[in-house]
Length: 66
Image (cartoon, rainbow, N blue to C red; front, side, top):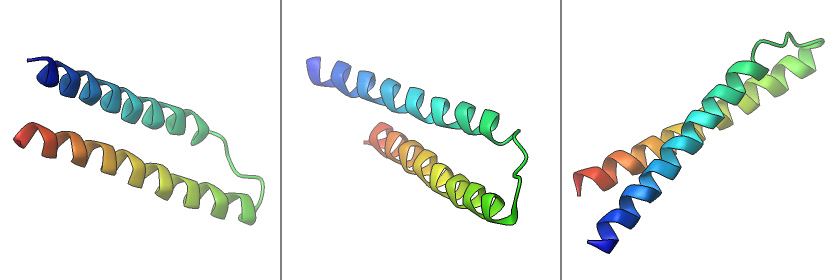
């Protein structure tokens, strides 16, 4: 019973992290890059954030399936 509650809390924490990453990037994404180099950096960061959110969501879904 305690283990199930721990897993559920962990999943909630992971989902909160994914949400915060997405919200933060949404705000950052509204800033226009001032140069091509800055645009490249933003795209690279965007890909890294997307990969992190994907990893979190994949893990949560995998844990829920058992």
